[in-house]
Every structure is written in C-alpha cells, then in structure tokens.
Length: 224
Image 1 (cartoon, rainbow, N blue to C red):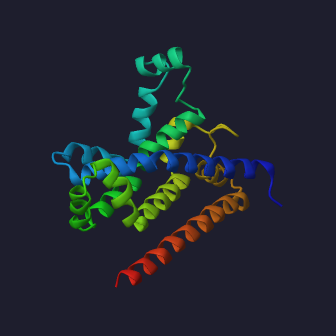
Image 2 (image 1 turned 90 degrees about the vertical axis):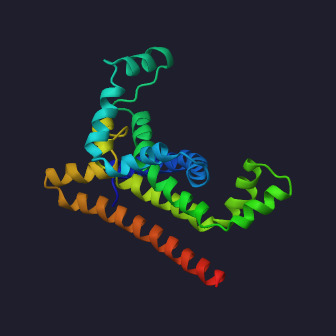
C-alpha cells in the first residue's frame, strides 16, 4: 500500500518537473532559434552548455550563495518581492530551470539546423517576418525535436539530485523530491522504500524514453 508521504514526494517531484518543462519550452524555442540562426552566439551557447558540464554541486553552491538572504540579491528579492529561493519550492524551480536548460535548448537548436533552408526562404519571399516564420513554418516541421526536448527535460528534472539538494535542502512536503528521498532512505537502511522511489522513477523514465524512440522511428520512416 502506498503511504501518504511517498505520494506527496512523488507528486512534488512531478510538479517541479512539469513546471520546469513548461517554462523551458518557450525559452528553449527562442534560444534554440537564436543559436541556430544568429551570428556571434558563442558566449550564449557556452552559457547554455555550462550547466551540463559543471558539477551539480558547484552550480548548486553558487545558487545558494547568490540567493542567500545574507547576500545582496537574496536580500533584495526577499525584501522587495517576498521571494525566497533558498530552501523553498521556488528555489527548486529556479535551480531546475537553470540545470535543465541545455536539455531543452540543444534538441531544439539541432532541430532548427536540420531543417532545409528553403522553408525560411519561401516564408520570407511571401513577406512573412522572422517570428511568424519561426512559429508557423519552422516549429511545425520539427515536432520530434520539440518532443525530445520536452521529454529529456522532464526526465532529467525528476532525477536531479546535486543542485536540488544544495538549493532546496530536504524539507518534507516542500523541497523533498524523489532523488533526495532515495538517498535519505538508503542512508537510513530503509531499502524497501528506496526501491519504491527508485522503481517509480525508473518506470516513468523508461516509458517516456520508449515513447520518444517510437515516435522518432515513425517520423524517420515517414521521411523516407
């Protein structure tokens, strides 16, 4: 029988992953377009890749320092906007957005780059602007890349440990996500509950990856 605490932790994990994915989708569409088609985006591309290369503990540490109420930025946000990003749900969302950014942007960037240039050229010849072309011409032709970005972002977010532990801590029903719960249960030698969390994440990840590979196979078959 599933206990209430387990359900709360899993629901919180999926809630954070869903919100993170929804926020990153439009951001990824825009950044992917800029990196794919605009010149002099080297610094931007490095910044997008940085969360993927940096150790999670390093990123989490600097987020913790930056948004601490003891420092200027954290104190300013707390006093002016009543926003607290350290050991809070909002902090987990912010950390997840930053750390999962490359998992959304990179598939979309490659999706843009793999499109034939004739799509853009035809749209511009018809007098359409860049925003219209991106939204109504390019994006409908890169559905598999969009889906890949959504699924990899969601899956990566539900499994992240280092960053969320640093910035969110381990507060039950507020910042305690499944990856942290697994660590805590193993540390407490409660392997049965750790298995329950682990298997749930494994099952969700497996199903989502199965969906993306199945859709990609169908897409490439239709293209031939």
